[in-house]
Image (tube, rainbow, N blue to C red):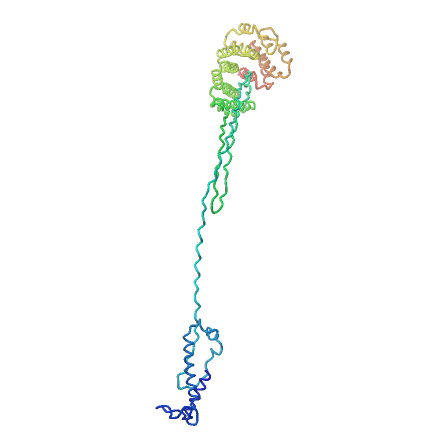
Length: 442
């Protein structure tokens, strides 16, 4: 470029001096001849260089930026060299047009699109081959257990207060073994492992004979009766009645439940209800001696001595306990006396074959006129100390009845008070002494 500019300047200076060829044609001289004292060679060279420079500039402008050499690539405007950003020096106006300014062209980088990811190949599914499971050998059947012999309840001994407890035998049932759990295999990805089903053993278990509904209800009723007697001993009569009501609901013809219910009602002062309960007991078991004796006692004190006579007579016929029969003779003597029946003569006939040596035989002898009052008191204090309270309670009461039958109310009251002093609330003579005292105090 510097050569081109110098050539232009030189040609301009020659033109000013008049060393310029005419316009109508080249000068008429031979090549290499000097005109106006100078050679034409510099002019020719300057023209050739100008044409070459113009062609080179056009080639550089039209060539893509990606194909330009690194030295010719124009940097961005913000990063141009200082010599490019600086203003060009003023030049003299040449004859020809000035060289065009080459502006830097920022060619944007080509956007390279990401290649699409290749789709994953589908997994190869291998065919599932089910394993052949051989059946397990069947175990031999277990031998059936021999049936247990039925256990018959022991005979209940008659007692004045409560029935004897009966042991409850609950039939045992052999438990059936639970089947083994099925074998589980965890699946492995991607193909699940085959599941092998466990085969249940073909064993037939024969359970023992289950108890019948009647046996179960009877056992449940007995449980309620046992709890009721425990509550009665503690004076908890309402709780006892709840258990006994449940017992007769389970088994309506359970004689022991009705008897205990009558006793609880009698102790709580419900005499008519107790008489009804004793009647249900006798209906379920006609030879229930304690129920007959208890109903005769209540019939005597509710004002029905004739019914009491019948009950005491029946008691003598079914009672297996010797002391209970002898006590029934004494109560029968009192019932006949208040029913205006011959009490003394019938007593002699009824006890003709009884052994009156042991207690309460001395009391029977006293009413027959065979033993004085002192011998009865001596018999009360003699003997086993275990039954001393019973002998005092029953002996003092019947000595008071004997004094009352003779018209000696003061002595009768004294004996009734001594009866209460024993504190033997479990005997009927204790309750009867209170009734006699109430009658004397009216």
